[in-house]
Length: 298
Image (cartoon, rainbow, N blue to C red; front, top):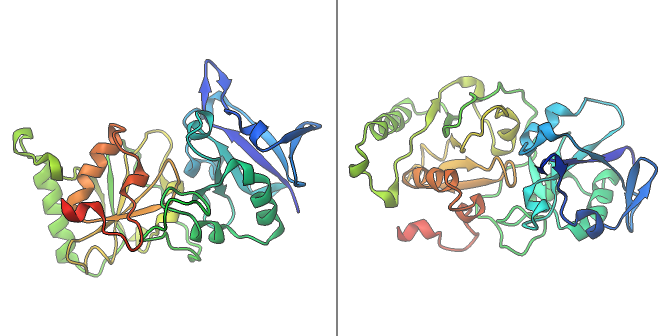
């Protein structure tokens, strides 16, 4: 088992790092300038910087120097951990940098040991997470799990904006893409009194660039610049142009980076609005396997 795992805090108050009860929950034992997790040989090192307050998992790989003794994953201690809302976030550094998976605090040592020892890969973690982004959680299986085993490709950064992004990843149907753009343009010119609040129109910045062809959800978080907090990134992929409801693949950037939610085009505007005002969480839009999605009754 090589290297030590960085435990990066991204939640601060009055200049102090907030970790909730995580160190006690994992049975962290002081060992020199780091800690060892109870019941394992996994060594962790606390990393704190107030400049990382609210930093998201997709931004982490760019801060970790390539090579060296760093492990293939980083553990993110964010607001969900600090305020008891969820387990720590494991962020992939090696295969698809920036994608994440939540793990139960009590199992952190066990899971890290398996990942570092090669018994578990990050693909295994992603394939076995529930709709809440938790590895082996009990929230139900997602109907559209994020793809794994992706070819390693380099993509350019996405635009830095607070607006939702609609990124074209399939270039087989120009006419259908232009129809989507026309709807975006029409939405931007609507009078507020004309808007159906049950099906709020999507108002997004379109990205039409073949450099993003075949971009997959897990690859998105690392491409979002940290300067501004983009509401969401929606992919117009092959499914968008071949299925009746023109579904978009929306990517979680914050709670479980890289997790996918597939929604009909007509529902994504409402999703963006609810996420922007924190009225709903991303996980509430993830369809459950073998369960009728809520929007079919809308």
